[in-house]
Image 1 (cartoon, rainbow, N blue to C red):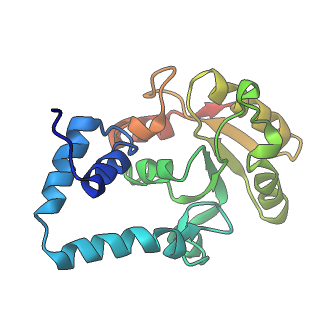
Image 2: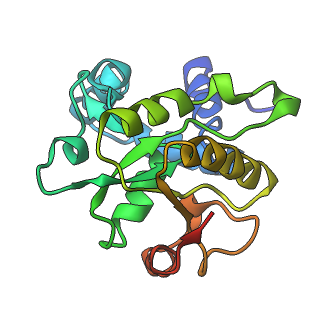
Length: 201
């Protein structure tokens, strides 16, 4: 007879398997590890998960992660240069760029890439808000830090054409990032090289 885990334990494994990069064996190891936690730590973990969507929201200005509908730390900082906006696909990519320590401007999260086959057009992306920020502020440059795959390039070209109508300088990350790559997986040195070598679009 096949050995089966208790239902609650199996449910935990199934949930852990849905995390990126976590297979069945890894999920099992994580579940067994959590089984050894003291009740207080389990309660703390469960509370953190339950409160995640309540306490972690998105910045109303740029789309970065923030706390309880507040402006994120980058947008709130008076030290940031608001004349330069770096547009990224997802909020998770902001951390990769910040790790380089070179970019001192602000960000704008596009929310993905143009993908007609998946029904994702310009209307589903956060492009209009970017154009609105350009109109309302004194933006001099927009850096398009989108992935170098086909969808990312198509999205960059589309956004660049929209921005150029507003007489704003448009550049994109260049050297250091391999073609077809996702900047989420690039290290800080690679990001730094790409920022230094950005070129007009």
